[in-house]
Amino acid sequence: MKLPAGWLGVVAWCGVSTFVPNAPAGPLVSNLVARWVQLEAVRCDVRRETETPAGRLRRLSRVHWAAPNRLYVENYTPVRRTIVCDGVLFMSYVDGDPLGFARPVSELPPDMERSLRVVPGTPMDHLLHWLDSDETSMAASGSLQRVVRVNGPPAGQIGLDSEGRVTELTVFDPVHPSQTLATWNYRDYREVRPGVWVPLLHEAFLFTSNGVHRELTRFENYRVSPEPVPPWNDPHRYFPGVRFTNRFDAIYREP
Image (tube, rainbow, N blue to C red):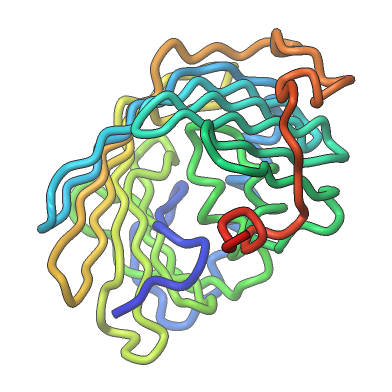
């Protein structure tokens, strides 16, 4: 089983607790995204731990994000990598590589361009895929007060708690719709603005032919601010002496 490119999850919103077959659930995804896009700038530290049958990997990053399409990321482990986007030009460099990668935002692959719009710590990385998808209300279950099926592709399911917050998200296999490819659980919600909640703990499970991959992501020192610290007017200042290419394959090709 292979998760579609750019995907790692799905979950829900508010209200309906009775099952209405094939009834439209309303613009749930759009309403959820509209809450988070109220945040104009975010700073946080990200700790991610991935467990696979082959072993464990830990990653640490510091993130500054601002709308529209501005991003500064320092990855410290397992490799040191810097990402800077001033809203127009995207630049990335891994320490020790012969070249960095740079390309105008307007020319980025869809998944990369979409990721620049994701407010850190929110499930927007998954929900943005479903903005134009049909939605169907399903039966509420356990602690989930509302469950919505999203037709995709790929199909998914969003689960909400009594506060209308996404707590569970599932993506299904496009070939075998009843088979789960991945699930995400969202916990430790914090109200960063009145009515705007952000989950600071994400737990993901990816089901593959090689076994289950578990990923636990913590967002620490989460701050919402009018403007992040890094200046955006000259992204080149972060890459002294680095040469760039607009093709990933050119970075590692043989000389």
